[in-house]
Image 1: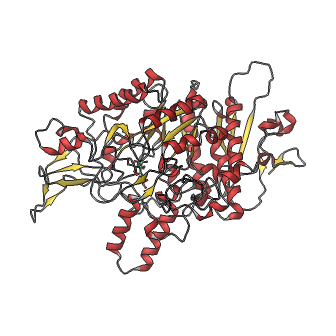
Image 2: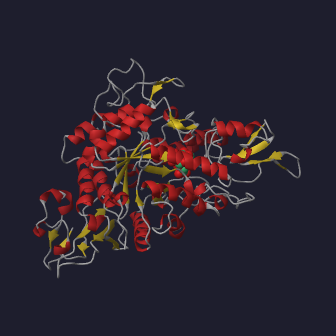
Image 3: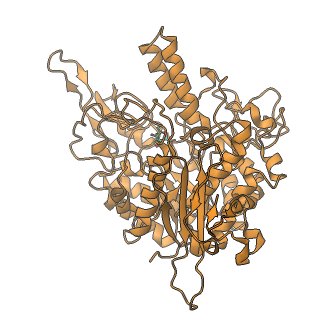
Length: 597
Ligand code: ISL
C-alpha cells in the first residue's frame, strides 16, 4: 500500500521569479530592464493561498551571472541582488509558512556558473586543489591534420560540443549546457560534501525541500567514452554515458538521507530517460532517494523524436497523451513509486497552445479540460505560474529580438549561418520557437489589464520608461488575474475547485487507484480514480471519479462504462455542493440507465 506523506497530499505551484511580479523595481544594469523579485512574490501570497496550492517552488534566485536565467549559480549561499536580499527571502519563507504553505528551492548542482569561485580556482592551474572538482581533459588530436579536438563527441543541450577549450591550462572542460555552466565532478567526495553542506545550510534556514535540476546527469561513465553519433530526437550524442550513470543512485541516497532528517520535499528533473523502471530506481518508496521525478515523455507529445533537434514540431494526438499518462500513472502506482503530474514549466510552451485551442472561443474551455485531466491524476500536481489563468504562447507577431532564451538565441544563430538566404527555412524555425520555445512560458504574469504597469507586473512607482525584461503578452487586457478572480466561471476558479477536490477526497485522488479507460478512442482521454482503501462498513459504497476530456473540439457521444451511482459528482449521492464542479456534471442518463456524455 502507498505510504502516506504530506507531500503526496500537496499541490506545487512553480514561480519563475523573473516573470512573476516586481516590487522593488531593481533595474538590471546589463540591459536596463526590470525583473520580477522576491518582494513581488510576497505581495501575491494571498493570491496563491486563494488558489489553494500547498508548496511554492521558485526557479533559481541565487547569485548568478544570469547566462541561463539563474541556472548558472556563482554563489549557493547568496540571493542575487536582482531578486532581492536574504531578508526578503526569509520574509517570503515566513509569509508562506504563516499561510500554511511550504517553500521549495531550485537546487542546481550538476553544474555551477563559470564565475563560481570553485571553477575560477579549478581553471587557474592543473595543480589547484579544485582542479578535480570539474572535468578537465587534454585535447584529442586529429590523426590527419593534427588539429585540436574535444576529448569526446558529447553534445551540449544548448547545441554544439559539450567541451570548451581553456587557454589557461591548454585543456578542455565539460559542460552539458552552456559554455558558462561547467559540470561538477560528483565522483570527487569533496564535491559531494560541499553540496551536502549547502543542502543543510538551506534546510537549517527553514526551507522545506528542493527541486533538483537535471539531477540524473550527475554521474558520468568513467573514461567518458564517445557516444553513438547523431542520436535521433533531442537526445544529445553521449547521453547514454551521462544520463543515469553508474553511481547516480549512490549519490541520490547521499542526498536522500539528509532530506529524510528534515522530512523535506524533493522532486528530481530527469531529462533523457523514458524508461519507467529507470526512474522508479530513484523514486521507489523503499529507495531512500527522491520523492518523485519529472519525466519528459509528457513534453514531447508534439515534438518529432526522429529529427536532429527538438525544433521539429509534429501534430499532437490525444492517443499519445493517453499512452503517456497511462504509462506513468499506472506504473508508479503499481510499483510503489510516486509521480509528478505536470504539463508546463519554464522550459515548455504553454499547454493550451500546444495541445488544445488557444483561440478566444475555446481558451477557457481548453484550460478547464487540461486542469481536470491533469489535476485529478495520480501523483503530486504541479501548476506553473499563469497556467491557472489560461496564459498562452507568445503572439505570432513576435520578432526574433523579443526572444531572450539562450537555447533559442543559440539555435537562431545556427539557422542564420546554415540558411543565410533561405527565408522559408528561417520562417519554419521561427514557427517552432512560437510553439515550443522556452520563452513561451516566460512572458510576465498577467495580473491586471493595466497598460502602464505592463499588466500589473511593474510596481506603480517604477521609474518612468523602464520596461519588464520580457514583453508582456498583448492579450492581458482581457486575460488577467484580476478579471478571473472576480469571475466564478474562469479558469482560475476551475483550477481552485480541482485542487480543493483533491484535498476533500484524498482516498480517491491522492491514495486511490487509477485506471485508463477506452484505450482506442481518437479524441476522448478518460480515466477512473477510485477509493481502494479497505472497506470498514459492510456494503459501504466506495467513491469513484470518472475524469473525461474530449479533445475533438466538438460534441461527441460516448457511453460511460460505469454506473451512475459510482460517480463522485452525481448530485444524488448527497455530496456537499461545494465539491461539485458544474462542468463535470455534464452528463445525462440514457434509456438503459447508462450515462451519455
Ligand atoms: O528545455 C529543454 C530543451 O529544450 C530541456 O532539455 C532542458 O534544457 C532540460 O530539461 C534541463 O533543464 C534544466 O536545466 C537547464 C536549464 O536551462 C533549464 O531551465 C532547467 O529547467 C540547465 O540548468
